[in-house]
Amino acid sequence: GAVVSQHPSWVICKSGTSVKIECRSLDFQATTMFWYRQFPKQSLMLMATSNEGSKATYEQGVEKDKFLINHASLTLSTLTVTSAHPEDSSFYICSAGLSGLDSYNSPLHFGNGTRLTVT
Amino acid sequence: AQSVTQLDSQVPVFEEAPVELRCNYSSSVSVYLFWYVQYPNQGLQLLLKYLSGSTLVESINGFEAEFNKSQTSFHLRKPSVHISDTAEYFCAVSERDTGRRALTFGSGTRLQVQP
Image (cartoon, rainbow over all chains, first blue to last red; front, side):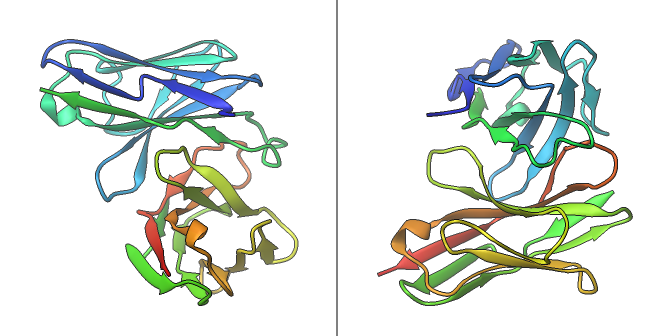
């Protein structure tokens, strides 16, 4: 079964509204979660790194006030796209795992992604 | 900063033929290297990784990749592909000595295995 559950798998919203995407680790505790964005026929681009109990670290060019990330527990991180616009339409993917120098032998698990369409 | 280049966006191949998916990377720091596979309507799954030791790494389903530091490459190979290998394959790197596990991905290669 899925180790990381991402919900919803797809969502359509109107311009100006906000959308929340959830990423849950089902059978392990994730000290770090990552949010990626993927445009058609392009690579996954890292948006932010989320560590439990601390503020997310955003990549250059990603608006932190537009893409709100909360990692309140070791099993849940959320990405909220605020005041969504059509250019925010994309495929969003989360990844969860352990962090630190000794963590590389443990896998990173990916959600199945959320396709957001803003009309 | 790192970058990953997968020059082939699509690779059509007949069943039981060999295949090579190319991956080159650029980085100012030492990196770990990964190949991920994405089957239709599924999330990314780790196929294989290079952390240290032997530069040739293998997966359980017959894929192998070789880390070539001088050529900054990590090409993926399989001597005989199956229909079930049809998927999108992503090469990725992460920083080696920081504990930061964020991945930098290539643009992906769609492997299409034909009967």
